[in-house]
Amino acid sequence: EPRNSVVRGAFVVVEGLDRAGKTTQVQRLCSKLYALGHNIKTLRFPDRNSTIGQMISSYLQNETDMDDHVIHLLFSANRWEKAKWIEETLSKGYTIICDRYFYSGMVYSAAKQNPSLSLSWTKHPEIGLPLPDVVVFLDLEPWQAEQRGGYGEEKYEKREMQLRVRELFLQLLKADDGRMKIVNAGDGMDAVEERIWKEVLPCVEAVEGGSFGVKIG
Ligand code: FDM
Image 1 (tube, protein in one colour):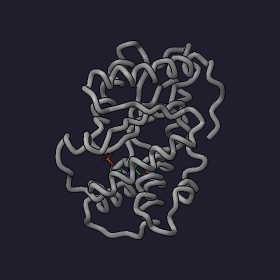
Image 2 (image 1 turned 45 degrees about the horizontal axis):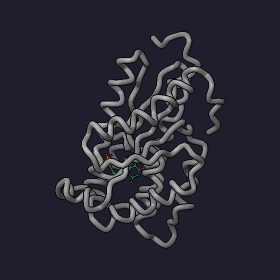
Image 3 (image 1 turned 180 degrees about the horizontal axis):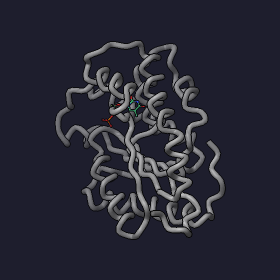
Image 4 (image 1 turned 180 degrees about the vertical axis):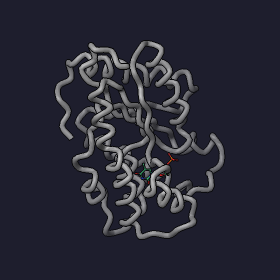
């Protein structure tokens, strides 16, 4: 059970390009926080377990075709399904580490270059979702990403798409209010882990200690 002294848990999002080492880094971050006595829950989007998540999974595996707006709204709905759980879990004092969130939602959809699906359009269905306290963006130069091995089988794992996704992430970063932290993920796992830790730990401590103000969705 969460410690009584925790005002609320922190909502930490890890974003990044494919092959940036996101999954490994999320695991390492969780174990380190856990070892320090923080109460941790993890989450990842898309959450392929729900009915909507299964539709998304089928789309990503090229089994179903969908209009770009439709799949965008399903990704968003997949987050809304979890919104209440996120709020409740944070208020119980658990810190949440979340692998991808609406930042991925926006940039992957906008990267399709559908003329009626701009970056600003993509934001609308996300408005009102629980807002993260900190977002770590694991950045990788395209040539580094490619050195890490070939592309997978899923829908978006193609060179042109990945380049546009990165540009759009960097665009979001420019417009950000300070909660997004860019971390160079091009070095070894340990160095990247250390960089993430330096961004995340102070935020988790501040939020759990109640000195971070009230979050507005
Ligand atoms: N993705 C992920 C989106 O297009 N929109 C979203 O809202 C989210 C959360 O789904 F290519 C894309 C990003 C990636 C794919 O993600 C599956 P994982 O992390 O590889 O499972």
